[in-house]
Length: 104
Image 1 (cartoon, rainbow, N blue to C red):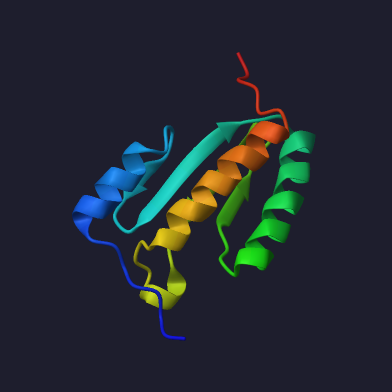
Image 2 (tube, rainbow, N blue to C red):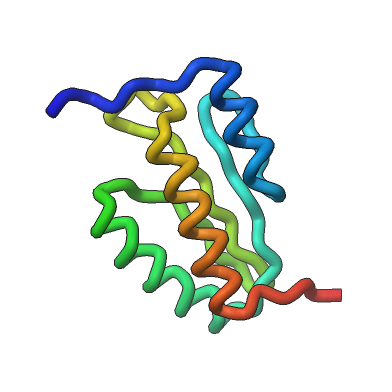
């Protein structure tokens, strides 16, 4: 099995349009979730488990009132691949299940 294939610009734009809240900076997509600290810790455990199962991992940054997830494919030369968008959808579902709520 070879390295994952990087996506072209048109495909990246199309896939990103289907992921509300995710932003692209260069060859990384990221999203910041407003979420309470302990709910974020629980979400991170679930994200880590799912990441292990799909063999693709996010960079996660936990703060007191938010969690930031960033994705790129290291095995593709730090480029965006289908795996990044698949994991982004999974992370959205996981965080939603852990009651991500806006903090006013």
